[in-house]
Length: 87
Image: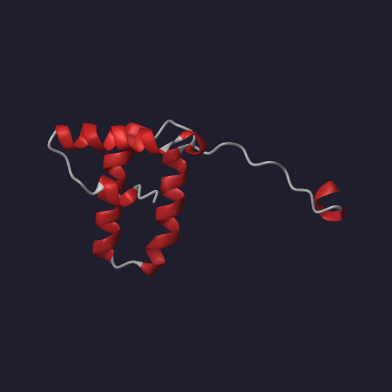
């Protein structure tokens, strides 16, 4: 009743990065070429192991920078910088 009368909605619960990433990709599939979907999936597969179990709201810029350095030091892709552009 509160939702309809006073337009008060339930507070959203914290969403995991892995869930948010999948939701984001599903919304983009209709607008991306099949090749771009493959690229985006590969980019997410780089980030999900580092952030997948974290609540999205807890990911900070320094977490992203640390993860990016870790991936780069292991010889990984630099595309992680593109996905987490916080500037």
